[in-house]
Length: 460
Ligand code: FAD
Ligand code: NAD
Image (cartoon, rainbow, N blue to C red; front, side, top):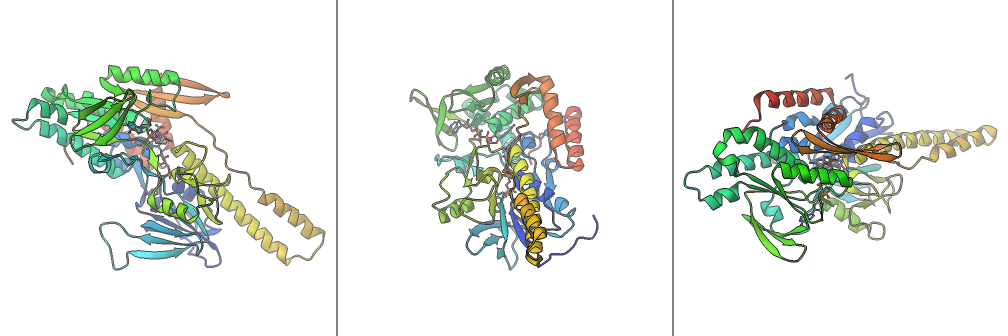
């Protein structure tokens, strides 16, 4: 990249919160000729979440699916400031935010206040626990890089502990029981990856223990993957059965203890399920900083799921604040597809706002007359910005044994497919969606490496 233009005090400043799907897509498209841009995110990279389940067992290395935010901002024409920090407070009246360095290493300055003209909130969501006792303490989540690393370490720890001399049979069974809570795509994909690891690697490295390793998935609803079509749900359940993954549907986790979970079936009966590893994947909830902002706007922010926005993604009850991705509550599902389309749309909207600002300035300099009227009409037209519209490109999920499922929109309807061919499609779709050539080559190398050398079983 060439020399970047510095910040320009005459231009408006957009502060972007987050470096996930929504914010990164916004950053890629925003025209920095028109605005100063500042990014605030506690992690200094973008994470390609669809391949995160593959990192829990080492099919893919986490470094292959992250992209430093500065790799993206260095290509912009004007300097973009990137702060590795968490936004801890938003003041919509003063138009300021408070940021804090919550990382391990802190300098003399670990808190600051930033001013914004526009605020773009792409802080995503946090893990839903429904306040169930013991979840935060004992379960692993699967949302961030460190979650995948923690799961990988714990799986190996459970297995090595089970191999310790003198371990009672019952204890071995517990340690080797891997339980997944939540039959949404995250839980399903994790269970599928774990199955592959067991079948393709652990079986040969731990022949005496491998057959004792059990995978169980617990889902509160009558079936898994409620967002997929019926035939794909059936196909997934059959494939899981073939893979010896037990699914307990209509079973709700009520409490999590250190070594067991307490579940309740639809008929009210309760049971204790001992586990070695527990992965919790029951969806999203609002982050504290967002909850706090909503509390400041009680009349306008009444949706519990997230920030209520209008059709142009502007936060209800505010001016100049926009929310997108999992942080917002719209009619769309909280997916990467929606978040990235919203990011791109919002960058376009800002481009148009800049055009309108320029036209308004020009209008002020014109004398009354035909020319001014013509320009005023043009401005009116430019101001009628189209609302956000989502284009669904299909839903995909990996279900193990080189099989995937796909619900794809086709000619106004839907085509459902599952199997090995869909898996190849799944791979190529994710590969082409990866943000950079660098990531693409790393992921392909990881896949080849896994096929030739197998997965690494060292405990990190
Ligand atoms: P995120 O991508 O979560 O990004 C949020 C950003 O905000 C992060 O950078 C975070 O560090 C930052 N942040 C957090 N708190 C603060 C704060 N206080 N201040 C500033 N920044 C903050 N969707 C699909 O469409 N297809 C898939 O295949 C798919 N697979 C998935 C697999 C997994 C394992 C998971 C967990 C999700 C998957 N999703 C998938 C869903 C998808 O990842 C989310 O919908 C998407 O990440 C939402 O984008 P976002 O930018 O809103 O949030
Ligand atoms: P989810 O909300 O889709 O599924 C969570 C599941 O947990 C639900 O089926 C729910 O009934 C169940 N559950 C809740 N409480 C429970 C309890 N106490 N006991 C047992 N089960 C319980 O969550 P997710 O899978 O993390 O997905 C979150 C979002 O990310 C979704 O929009 C999803 O589409 C998206 N995503 C997509 C993909 C993909 O496309 N391949 C992969 C991962 C995530």
